[in-house]
Image (cartoon, rainbow, N blue to C red):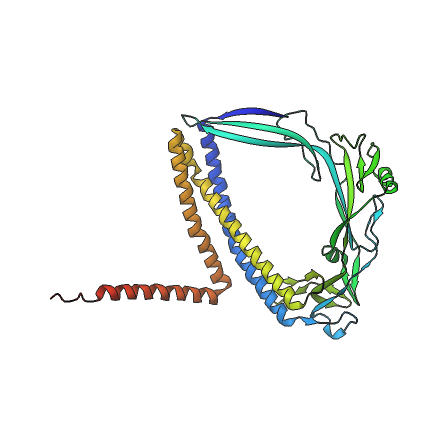
Length: 389
């Protein structure tokens, strides 16, 4: 099921849009410059906090509480025992022995997809042909049909949402840990619903449709084999964990985030038995991955910002379409060059602010290398020519 829509944008309208893009481009540049600078500070502070923590952490036995370690950064490992039972009080489903429970609600909905093809016209106008397609599928996300281009594909509101439930706390020997922190580490497994439980769900939510059990799920539909838009299916997953390891501050019998000297909080966790050194190594690796991900994202944002600022040149040149294509290629290359100049410069300035010694050492090494190359080049240039016979 699809339909095609053709729109034409005049050259003057495109110029107006390009002027707006310039403003958006400058805003994006400012945001990405701040992001790149902030990221270097975040990375350095996290690195130093982890180094500090690795030097302070004390591995303790989980069987007893030593008051001498109160307030200190400790590492414990051992079997996990949830305190209480995670339960969906609305629908009356629980998971005995689990650390967490998740309600997953899907609704049968219309989904819109689109594919566009744009052609430049002589004189600078632009013709866009867009094909909109519609299909139905089960989806956890509530899809708003208000923005659909074609009417007749209306989705109702999702009558009940997804939700997570965790035990209040869990114990590792004599220590107590927040239940949600433990539930996040667990392995997710389905909780098959029986016909009796599905009927209880039907009484609890009152969706106005009969409920049946299919594959351990409660399906609210007049015909589950031929679902209609607005039909609902609900299933549950439990979070189970046998053993876990934590690095945190010991406060009484509980474990809480530890604040380092630079204000960063440390609370490391891992499923299974993991020693402290391995947990700190994993945290440092995660910090590195986040740092590079933000760097790449910031550089991409800078490129998009510069490209948006220069886009008006391509629109002006589109009076003759093939000239516009050439200009856009050139402005993209310029945007890339500016990105490669500005991005590393921001990171370098941030390093001077946050890592002055390393930055000065790298800068000095670069200057020394440059001076050495110039010296060698001058030495070769000044070498006397061999005498001729």
